[in-house]
Length: 254
Image (cartoon, rainbow, N blue to C red; front, side, top):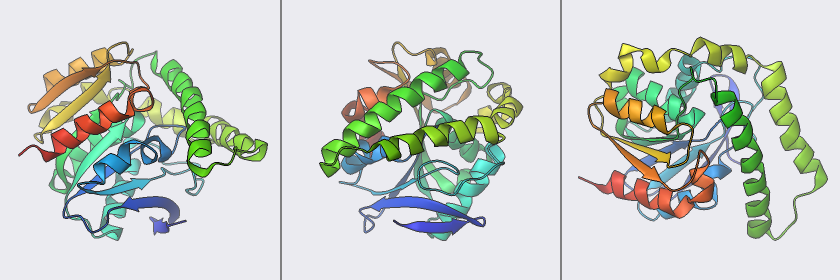
């Protein structure tokens, strides 16, 4: 299990095609882990790129942390990860909460970003966000179990299922994640969003409650284009090959 010490904490990472000339870093969403990309999306991207995946703090196999889930802290962690891997500039993609991290990264550290892909980033001020996250986390767990079984030919045991459930309970009831997200509720209203000049692809589900957030971002970001994919907030799970091909085409465009 590849683990790095980032800002004093253990972070689980996975890398594919380390010899490629360009790198894509993908950030997963809240209450999930890097396997959102690992089983289907990352392998296709790795045919052309070095792909870096990592588990956010308290997610997957990364170390549990009580505080620091605001976007400034999360982007500090991502910057430290890039420095630890000696990555000067990368293509960056983020899904759901990871999409917010990607946007904040493009605002704070534009010199580190080549192109930006945002998948289903919700408006933190939207009252539906909590419900979206709840639904997403349940469907993600089903997806994770199914792919774990298909890949390893081993049925996930009750103990591992319980571990995933405990992660959710820990994050939501013991950490500062709820109050930190409340702090970010005006993020989409910040003038800083309009400072993003990098080419940006916005991928949203046609039936997603977050689609209006994507349309709002398209109006704010100068070089952004919105693409609607059949599905809802869980499009990387529902349409992994469509998402992978869209990302690959976008990152390869000159």
